[in-house]
Amino acid sequence: MACTLEANQQVVFIGLMCHFFGKSSKIVVMSTANRPLSLGVGREKLAAPLSPGEHCETRAFATEETGESIKFLILQNTSEVQAALQIGNIGRWAYPDRPVYYTVAVPRANAIQIYNHLEVPIYAAVSHSEKAVESTGQWQIKSNSSQFWLRTSDQDVHLSLSGCIDAQTAQVFRGRVGKVLHIQSLPSTPDWQGIQSVRPSGVSYTRNEAPRAQYIGIKNNLRLSIYVLVLSSVQEEAVWQSTISPGKTNFWHRRDPEIVLVSIGSAPGVPRAFLGKVGHTLHIDNLY
Image (cartoon, rainbow, N blue to C red; front, side):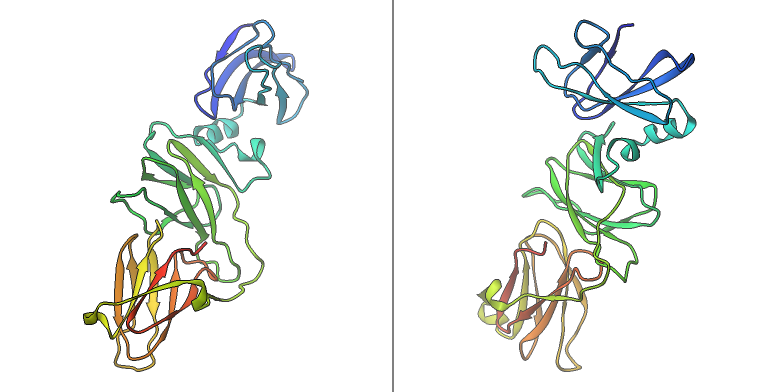
């Protein structure tokens, strides 16, 4: 039997008709190669341990050109398997110990796509490329659903669990253009550890110009939007949460130094507490 597996970038699936367990079965093969591979020809024959079970793993012989060994999964042709392959839900077989994995995004080659395989919604924010006007805010992705962000280069993806008040779940992964980032678990600490404070010596301040002498400024130097709340010691001063886009600065009128709460996402424990100085702008350079 000779057949061809088109390995488009990282992950591609193909169906092979073979006689299997004494009856005709359809075998689905996954490859992580980045090139076409011919199976059943010369040294590149598929050595498959065809033993009963939901799936099995095997490796092809090393190719003559590169000497690389290629991993395959062989799955029985069930409705569950076919439904999973339709959305790239292969983590349980291919990457059972990883919180995330990637598959090729078709047809969105100019986007970063995120698929939530959890039973609860998640929040996601994707950083932007320099000089690009793109959404960098946080969006909810429902269970067993996906969202995509148009991007021209790989970016940081900030993720957290929706409505999780008893644990810290915020994580940052790399989003790859033309790939789907599949979320099958989010590592977390068992208990909320509170809001972390950042010492003034660990951040940078610049002096405001004269018209802003009685204001506390916050500048976002990240590539993600941030959410900012500047506390007030007196009642008449406005207190509200403000969204600051990358590269932008917002100002709050204050009489005295105040605590500034800054976050990217909603997960408890993610916000950081800074000291806001009147007449100065606090630069947010790192939150994760």
